[in-house]
Image 1: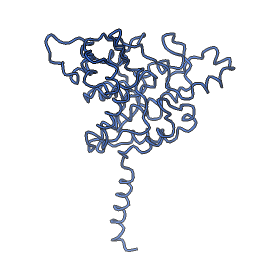
Image 2: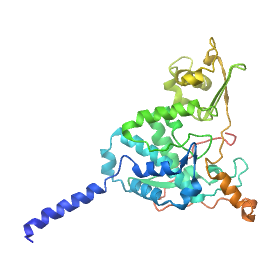
Image 3: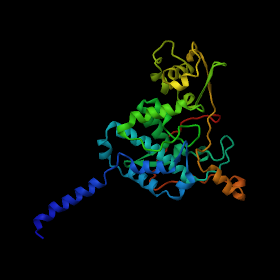
Image 4: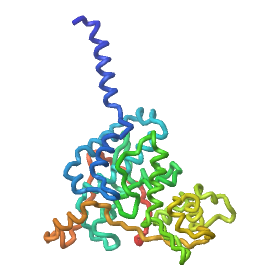
Length: 315
């Protein structure tokens, strides 16, 4: 072969290799896994645990994003990236400790919160940098100033946002968040209106993060500053789906209702819970309530430790 053709050929091969390794901003692997294991508002963790290879591959792809790739992403691509990263890392953490059988009396035995320091100490890598779940949620996603992210962050509990069957992507980011908001606010386990008592029972999410809903409530600049309950009522008055607003009698104003914050259901959002209980009911180890094993560090982990969000024991 003529040597003068070798150099251009090598460059062409390298360019092809680089292009094939570019990160998939459609998050197709993650969507494939969600379609396979999400069942309504729950997740088949037992089934997923048997075949974690695709999830591990997706997490590895997140870790291998180059700083240049991250910099070149559009704002909406980065938003979708971080939302998918949080939800995927949470699933990974559950699978690493499944079945969860904890002893903390404040939470259900299968709760994500039975995993010691799950949000603060579990380290994952995105684009070569290490993050905790706490950092992704509070320092990145909440910093987007979209209150709807609270209806899309899946914290592996029945009382939090429900999982979707597809990944977030940049081209449908706004529509995806709107759909999450519609679903969350339409669910009576999150929003329940009692016209006779003039009360509205709402998810603990509104108690944990009332100021995140302040701007969208339309009353954030009023004097004196509105109370948390006033912010929540104003936000819901503007954003409740029509099907829910129909529960409010004509002449009533939601802002005149009293707010009741529903205790959060920290039970694992596990579609295989009954199957696992039946399988382990005869096990002496299960009956004793074996403590959750020490926090595992995945192959994509680092050493960063960040503060934890406070969510009260009763919430």
